[in-house]
Image (cartoon, rainbow, N blue to C red; front, side, top):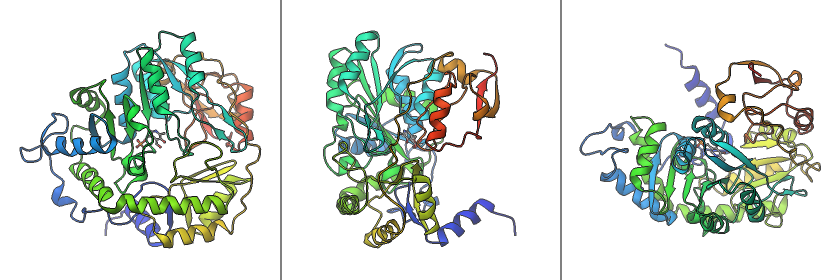
Length: 438
Ligand SMILES: Cc1ncc(COP(=O)(O)O)c(C=O)c1O
């Protein structure tokens, strides 16, 4: 028998019956209607249509998704929200533009900066000291930065973020529109929100959402949506730059089926999950609505040592999405049933939880020496972070996940940033790439 190391690893892990409190949102349960995957995995033919040419059954399925979000049009993405962010910033900006970018952006946005040679002005957020996380984007802070840089026409933020923190999108969109600009929202973690209520997502001019993160949809399936500012042809043209010319029909069909499933009972199941999350937030020290407006389905528990709590949970076969020094993050979805929440509650009751340890805000961005583009394409060498002080990062240095950079590509690895990374438990023996040309 030939070896199948990956398949074996995955099937043997699945056979352990792990409690999957991480993405993808289907949690290993059967995907609605996808029992015969190969039978519907086609290529571009007259009956199957063509994603990047538009129209046909794909176009109709996209239109139905746009309706769910109350947006004008939607493009299916088979390269995750990563493809969506690259596409959105390609549409929103001209190469060389200055953009106002949420410092907590995912690395796909940072890579878009480099590919498009954009010049970032980083948007910081207020720090929620009790919760130990960054709060919602402050419209006042956005105004302040735009007054300093009136040439900026694109604001790009993440909402909700990994911790479920939501920002006031209608207020931010109105502010940008008054100045003749647009709002790009990385809503990678928010594909389920339209099924739970009105979270203002439709205020975005461009919105990216990963179906696979929080909905019963396979890995990499995602959506790019737009309102008014761009046509469907614009989405297809820019999306095709970053997407495969052979997009998976199985994945696109899964998006179609996922929407139908959500409207036929999935949304109700999600509301039950939201109730379970509210109950667990009461039982265990957690981020709550008192801290900020939150994604009601995201569970973030606090712990004096988030990494130790994560390890203890994994020892009990409960697998969170991520941990940092003071939190453990879970992604419950509509695919989690009552028995899953019983397991989660039992495991949580056995690990050390409590207030997070006065978790410090990230230091201000260090000095920028190279542009993101220069940094990404610079000749580089790697060395342990602990030995890199004074050098210029050619990569992001970010607690992983969620990939929020303490040092962004092109910035100097200064004493303060390295000390901060140590303080939050980042392994400074980890290798970083530095630009060899500076
Ligand atoms: C905020 C955010 N944006 C974008 C992405 C990229 O999404 P995908 O994994 O669907 O490419 C991620 C992935 O974790 C993310 O957390």
